[in-house]
Image 1 (cartoon, rainbow, N blue to C red):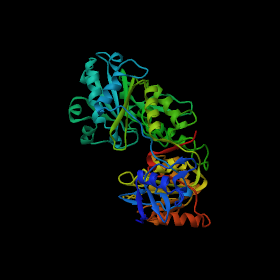
Image 2: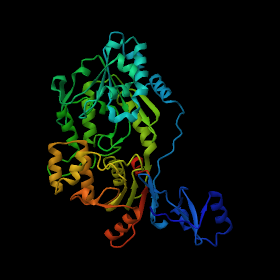
Image 3: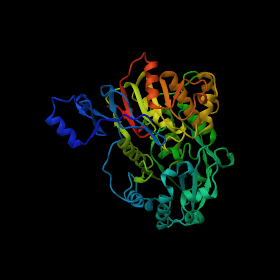
Image 4: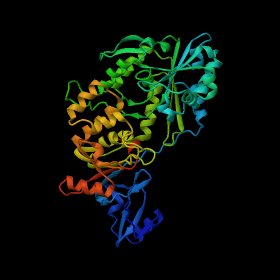
Length: 482
């Protein structure tokens, strides 16, 4: 880890005093990006020049300083700071249930004797803390006269594996597990699937018949940016959550342009949740066929603590949650730059290369065509997904990768494909603990330090240092243009 040691660190008070008293003695060009003063991370004085030290790029448990001249740093993107209501997670859930969006309260939507299905996410989404909101939701249904034997909890596993009893207990608490029937959706179990129609994009919709047999369906989950669906949560509880494998494969293949060799659809991306995103639009159609009665979705912070909850109409309550995520992590950007340096955020966010897709997708929003992307991700567990690894390292050409993906689409494979495809369009440099050999024939360059990455960037770009956008929280900052 290379560190640049300043002559003297500066406080804000010290910085202002020097600028006021000794303006003629010091070069203060480093204080500004155009007309906007830099956000304070660290100011320092070195050889009579006042510099701004950019926030270090985290890599596992290490940090790398960004050694670029200040005039080449176009922007340093940080998550937005919002003033949100201060409540406990349980209070957030109860407030949402008491203030439903575009819906009557849940108590008024169900009645004694109704069979009620609650759709929950699986163990791969434990960050949503379902063990917090499921008991509260169960209590709400009980107060409306719904008996334990009239409730069914289905875990929306999509194409994921079955879960253990211990994992089920962790999702809903031991008390709920002992009282309420909980089953896993199995996308290949044709006996438990019912055909309900075909979307306008030609997706045959097969859904879990145990959910459809209930009088009321309640969707639960969490909302984050999603690199395919635009945002997580909402309709994803139905597709892919409780959909058949054929339905999921057809829907996910909409992430690719029609026709072999045409690559990925650029409209299938984070924060794009309108008709131009065919994956999202197709999910909405499929979900409407299930006709959900109610929805509870949560938003969490970087520490995976629930900081907001939304309940009510399955469309508009979900969109309200998405709007909050966008206000938190959608960061204004003024220009695209030829270089983007983005950290996945250090441990544990960069445990594997699979997780780094969020950082890549965000970096792609602000890099110039044909530019250079430096991804800082330790990835001490390697790729973290066999399908991702196979897509990146297991095929000689992009055409071979695409053929394999179309034949057997999976999220992990699509992630690997996006990495390989992006490396064809941009200079991609990974600062990682992985080896160059791990990446096979893909055009991803591998180095060990950020200084090595900057040196390689100069080499790839005719010996020039490039104007850069810095993204020290790359997984959680999505550049957005007005």
